[in-house]
Image (cartoon, rainbow, N blue to C red):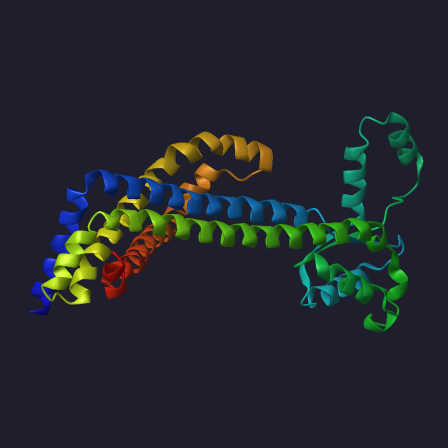
Length: 314
């Protein structure tokens, strides 16, 4: 009996969908636009996160060792730094590699290279490149490096300089940019979600408005609210599912067209590659969002016509 009633509700929902062709098309169009906005927010969030990570990767702290620093002490300090929970990575650059990189950077400066070759020994010391997990954590890492009590006996003298204070302004500014961008992204997503729900709700309510007399007749003959509401919820689910498929199809040529442009402008991320690589997750988000939007909008839209107050006012 229950299964029979469910089949009747589903069949009635499909009949309503096909019978109200133009209204269904309008609802699908609006939900498609809404889902396209939701999908665009996914790509916007991916591009934003990639750009922020690129900015974070450009910020670091360099520890420059004295030329006479013993290699064992330098590696001991490197090991101490790697134990800090704030540290994401520590890269050691030897004196030989530092000299090689210096020559490559100044390969076109003949006078500098000539002066370097006249020296009896390598004037450059080894160094450590330290990256933190978050930009706000660089200050605590710098304090650790400057605190003689945090270092083993005799290791403090091997450090020639730390460039944190020279980079502090840029690091603080980047931290504010990252926090502001993340807050803006969340705010945009919330605002667009609210606008989308309101638009879809009103569109579905307009679609159900064409069936208000049918709902009234069903109430008069004693049909239960769940049997009146059921077909409209199924109809809303069909709206959402169909719109989801249309949105996913539209994203393919759009992301293919924008892919190379985003890769050039944002320095690495290609939205088309992102769409293909994460299609399963995007598919799930769009499908679920479409079904929920259609079902919930239909549920609340039909409530007005299930209240006796509406028919008394009419």
